[in-house]
Length: 154
Image (spheres, rainbow, N blue to C red):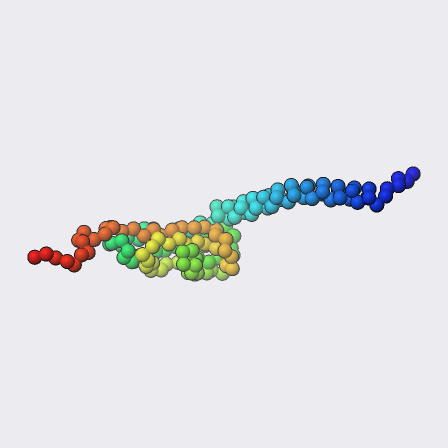
């Protein structure tokens, strides 16, 4: 048994199928993108929970606001999986130190800054933060007690 369909009917049926297919794809593709994004976030969150990064001592105190504070700090990190890891100053995007095929490490240096700095642990050649810590900069005095005016009346 054959059904005879002319060209106009084929074009209408083809267009209808295309419209239906595009509608389905428009609904499915965003759901797939959201699922992939959620999976990526879950993997990053799992990695963040596994890695640890600690700095001691944490606060750096300067005498007056705007002055540079000086502090010798020690970073300790660990991760259950041995790999190539780097300690990075996220505030300045400077790599402080890298370790090859290690799952823990320690690094000491003289911190000098007028601003608080964030530090992160990353796998080498990656921009994904595995762990994060901060060295906060604080001041004893926010401003000088004396007015900055140099004018005096005698």
